[in-house]
Image (cartoon, rainbow, N blue to C red; front, side, top):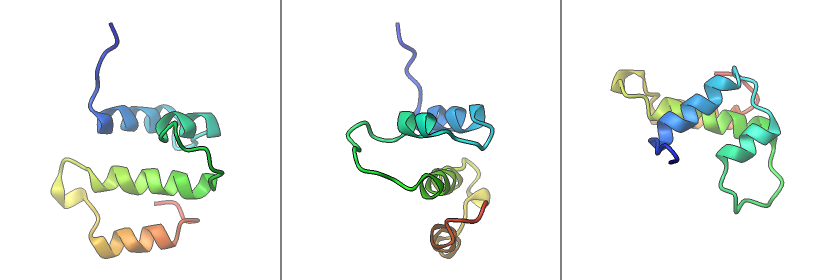
Length: 79
């Protein structure tokens, strides 16, 4: 039987397994399989990192909306 996991926990495991160096195959495992369009690897990695920060259990560890916007606009930087 396939173990059912909470989406956020599953995604954290995938990112953690990759040691912050997600390959295109790992990114495709996380993205919606219906996504057929080309994507910019670095932007998707940044989006995943920002998304994980936004769902931190500790509310004080979550970024503010202005920080989120800055992180998304500066997608070539590592946070």
